[in-house]
Length: 220
Image 1 (spheres, rainbow, N blue to C red):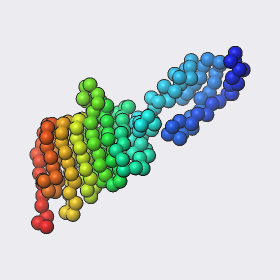
Image 2 (image 1 turned 180 degrees about the vertical axis):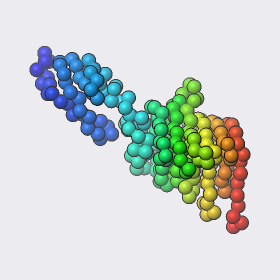
Image 3 (image 1 turned 30 degrees about the vertical axis):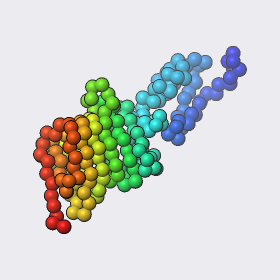
Image 4 (image 1 turned 180 degrees about the horizontal axis):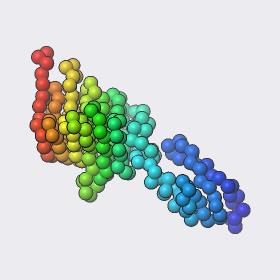
């Protein structure tokens, strides 16, 4: 028991806002440990825990971007902020039809290496970068990779950041055409910057596109 009358147990199990249980071990009255690293205060320990979280949704921290997206159960606009670079390797991120995600890259990047898309988009996605460096990007480094793949329909508002891939924005669907607004940011492509059905659904107001823009019509 310390001078303030608090009883300290050997282990502390704390429930974070993301509903995960984290155990802190009390080594002495002023020393905690997390992941075998000692900290002098509980606040320092919380800061260490936060640093393991890549993404936040309205102040709630998550370990992965997909976990953060899956937590969104409303069609209302929801802000998701990156706090570190995210490497997907051969995986991708999926945004479903009833979701309206605002993704702040905050100077960080999302990278994948697959033959599909870094992001599978069926809902609505707004991409921005609030960092002073404006260095955030979404990337697919596969030789024929896609940055954002519009799965069925989908809507994209690009206000900041960079999307880099062999084809940065891609849709191949004879029934649905995505809506794309480019109002800032950069599209970088080795092949097509934008490839979608119905060019009328593409609005380019400002920004940079390095790579061709192509559309197709099924003749309906």
